[in-house]
Image (cartoon, one colour):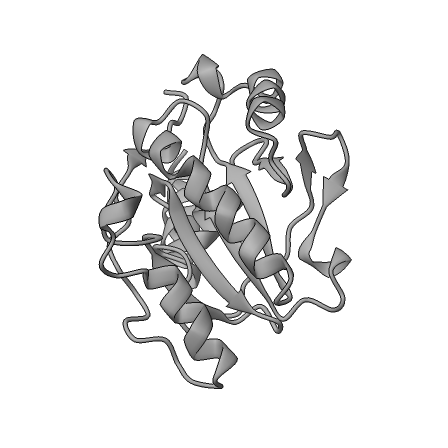
Length: 197
């Protein structure tokens, strides 16, 4: 029993060194292969010509995610033509939040006419790698999957017309100029990610 306890402790220590809180700006992100609402599997490797990736952890039920839904749809359309691929990922466990089931994801995507993959993080393996803690939580990656920006989409959850700082769009504009985004990290405002207890 003592040996098992020691091994568990050792694994915990190793995990804390390898990825204690997810990615930081400058880290290289690992690609993933997740199922989308069209029942196809998607990964960033599928997009050979992409200039970058907008990875958004979001969901169906969270009021913050719902308030940002139209903005996420607009961002996907606006930046697709510029070579940036938006991938939305639902990190929630449906056992903890039934409204975020795969079937209801499919229904929501159809209702809102999503033009981007809406992926299900089955087994909740991807969001901890990224360090996502909220829905929505954004990670902007360049074409080499280097993390360039982490945080909120903008500075006004409640009213898109009252936004003063478009953090994500400003970060993309900086990349377009070959510059580093400033700020490169902001606080994500949203619901906590739901994990089965």
